[in-house]
Image: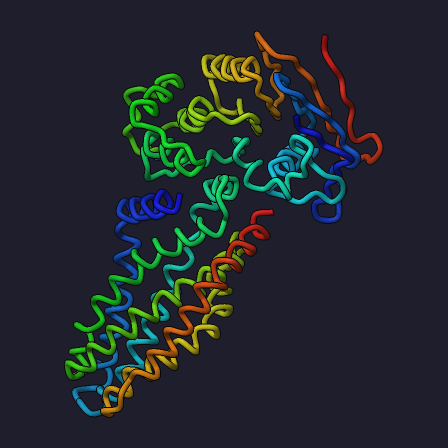
Length: 219
Length: 218
């Protein structure tokens, strides 16, 4: 069941590669604008790098969230998923995992490369990678709740940003905090642990909340 | 057996219907009729458990569908207004995924067989966006061929189908009924069935109390 959902969504993403690539390019371009706008002051760039990369990651993830349920809702396949003889929790988990693999993993992989633009040392690039690796699943999980709540609403795109961005704040603080710590030479462990804790909490609650929201949206 | 008791539905501030009662047994088809906006789709969605009724309840084999949950879903196939097929996927992929989600591991050959039956042979690997409206509907109908569920809930199933496909649907339903299945079908067409018993429920618009009538054509 779970495997069917993930495989299905990955196939769909492959058939609509443009959607996926646009999210990735958005991320790359937003992050690249800062060095261009600020100029080649490596000290300043290093200071703002964690925040810039993380904020860009949040915004890029917002872009892809709209698609999580919207297309399935419009063509009626979401309805069918609600009627499958498996817990809705599993369906939702499958869709979130697929969304993370498709929209967030490429971003995590390319982030170290982008970090080079900001003159970040290798250690810090590693921390950036790890913090994004732990942090982006949280974005997908929390985001799915918003996507389910705004399903079928007009102007859902703006509403989802208003709903979800405030909830992303802890992820931003600890994620950027970990990279910051590594830049000033302090251990980033505490921040990463806190990110891990956030991930655990959202893994438990987000799919459940999303399921409930989907049932309401489809009434 | 499917039992619907005292069902009422309110959309917006309007009562669509109230006090709908019916009971259908194995081998029976219930045809739902009524003008546009009389609540046929809402009634079907309530029966599926996609929507909560304002009053009353739906029971499957004596248990409320809310509490029967997944056990009920295992027995149910719903074909709604929207076909429930992905434009980017081929009919074959659509069918196999739909079956997989319903907990049925459909082999490639069996899926092809089902698609042949609905007349999509030779087009089974074409992405659904290249199919015509009627062919998409046929692609959705392939789910009925492949599934082994007991209760079929079909909403406007004959829309955009040609006469050959209408015959196909009739024979599918007749086969389903003679295997002891149940079906609820919302349609304006008169179905020509070779097997199974037949009941009709008429929903009228907006006038509470006069909302429903039940007849049994001989």
